[in-house]
Length: 352
Image (cartoon, rainbow, N blue to C red; front, side, top):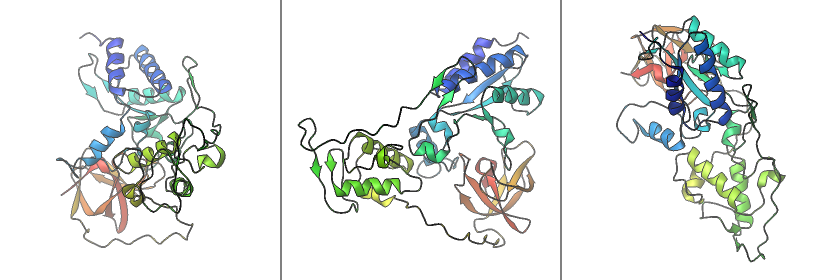
């Protein structure tokens, strides 16, 4: 049986990863080439995911037919920023996918890490073996706030630097090129849009900046762009906010935008962990989608959680509900495990 051509793997992967960041794309293709030279066929299964696609996935099982497949809204996945890809191996001819995490799989991860990727197989708690990401040191909240990563390729020297955060000159209402409408008072949901200015606009900008997560008009500029003028940057901040919360993305701030604000909470003493109720509040969770067993974690964050144990494929646990958590496109199931609350990543469980 003839071996699949390198170009075939590259063409398939390029199509599947879509509009990922230029450095991520260049590095991903180099991983495929280096692995191929070592006799390993690797292909990309997923890359960039638009906010519209993320919204479609989030709607599934909620407002559209099908089962719930993710708890991540638009803007809550690194795939939405083109900074992550997922890979798998193929057989010799490239006609079948191979998902077994063997020596070849780990060798691909090693090649990727040597070129600047982080590998989901290194995470504590739940591991995500197909996942590769490159964020330039930025957190998800920083990306959501509009900050751009500074990625430097180890392949061909491609550099992606974010634009300098220079404060834009304040537009003046007296300039004939831009007419401004003054809006006084506090912003309590009345319609504000591009072209408005005044105290109400500044209050809107401040509320967006104080949201959790924050949405700055221009992070890094003077006062992070809070200047009382509803220009292009404030319109962009409103659009990012609307996309994040699943609203109609039109850049106009009104009652629905106001209603989604989530102010930062003052630091307080950590609350004691809830105790299992016994029997589960929402029936049972059946373990699916794993080869042998699913990992149960002590918190809904697969990068930082500790393992409580494992549950075999097909087994059931009392189900308390689902939570968004961190670092998982599909969220987490909250279950009762050995007298404690535990968390299982969303794609490995099915409510029964």
